Length: 79
Image (cartoon, rainbow, N blue to C red; front, side):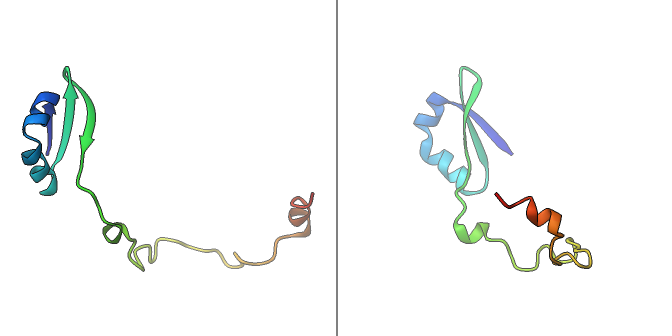
């Protein structure tokens, strides 16, 4: 769930807002009813790491995918 609060409430209840964000909630701060900022929980690098094998069986490589390129293609890279 996303909570939207105004700037004044954000100033006066900042500690409580941080507790809600830490619990996993997203908080949007609005000025004159228009959203201007979003506060979300910080993710550590470990939490963002990709797990080995997560793309298993989702990528298909054709036979010969690593074969040398034809001469015409290689020539296109020459200055």
